[in-house]
Image (cartoon, rainbow over all chains, first blue to last red; front, top):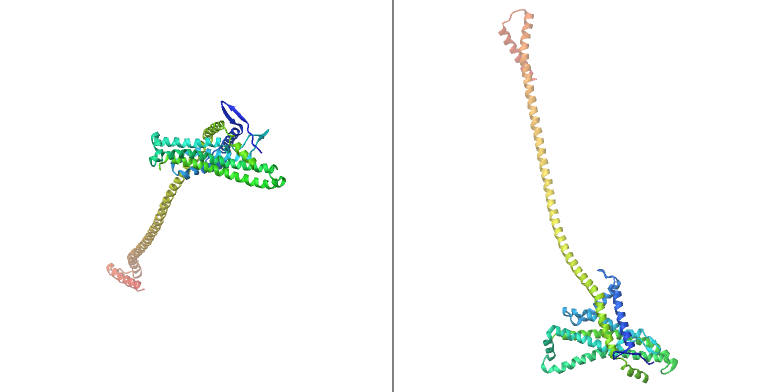
Length: 239
Length: 176
């Protein structure tokens, strides 16, 4: 099984149709999920409102575990959306697989470094923005030379590695899950080792791996959100 | 396995810069829309609820304190009213006793008075009766004697005789 993608070129940029569709689908799923849950808000929460408030409390808890005080308040909303978006996009490829004429149209958008990198970039840019807002431009730049001056190159490299580790960790985990599912699907189709025997052995393995991938997807979304919080907190506090 | 590796090798080249752009736009749109349609109302509701709960708790503590104060007041009032009731009953008893004593003593004095009066009336009546009897008996005796003896007795002799007779009567009456 080989994934083939359709490409569009627009204004000199190339768009992978599968990625774009999945990203838009993910955003729609998240929006309508939350929109649906947030109807008919009352002082005494109904079932839907309870679910939504639980989700909000959970994502707020991620921020609070890093920044216990009021300084974490501006990030609650960003972390909430980021967590839900990553959760949905991480598991999207496990549930949904649309193929037309041999071209794949949906997959986990986060199984692509070109998608995880802008996510990480957004988080880090926000972190830098809040750092600059809190300390002013001078203080913000001065923070790179802390605790001592000769740490400056190390700190600059760290910013870059933060970006890479944050994006590539997510990409690697989700992508590995998808690759393994692809291999298992190939085995069930008898294209692998040993025909019927391979099929029989592959189906339970695939079920197990899909379940595990859901778990990995949730954990990676949590890790991404937590690390984003860590970067936020490091930018707005001085060691 | 070789096949899988080829997938991996190909997949790394699948993404393109356009996807990044789409992601950023989609994500920012998602942020804006969710903030307007879901986050603000939900968080407002949660904050409102938190405020209401803490207000309610404060109110409950207040009203509890008030209720306790009121109960203590009631208790004190109850105690006072008990004492008052006892006092009222005691006063009533005292008054009743006083009144009874007074009534009894009044009755006694009146009875004594009535008795005295009766005595004196009786005495007076008796003396009057005696006096009139004395006078009449004298006259009668004289008349009788006159008619019997047809003899003129000296009126004064007659009077002394009658007095002696009456005295004997009175003495006989008193010794009876």
